[in-house]
Image (tube, rainbow, N blue to C red):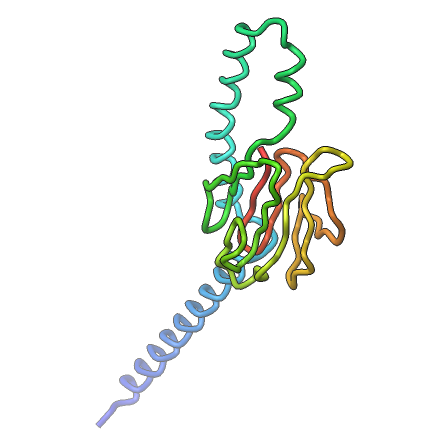
Length: 179
């Protein structure tokens, strides 16, 4: 026979377990939503800063050592430094990957025919393309009518946009920039 005290203890223990279960479900959902949110978490921002610091260190040392060897070409390295030479993925599943920028168009998307294949459910099969703009002689990005869009510097783009170096571009869970 179950006493009244035993029944009360079992009832409250069940309620506590039920609330722990509900809390764990809410926490799991929050983490899933936060991983795909457009607002970056503190951990993501810290990770981006570390990646930038690592990438900046070799870049800063190279021009300083090459300038004394070529004193007559002072203007040429400055112009070459402003033109990006790499597309670097700074966040997402392919973080740390880089693609050299030559005169070819770089396509991004889920399909295997793209230059950069992004395995992400929020990325279209042919999501965007990065190409050299003939008028401005700079790199530009164009969203290829994707469902979830392309975000350049925290602004969703609807037309081809010129990409300056170090400006973050987000496609799904992947963020990249030109360097």
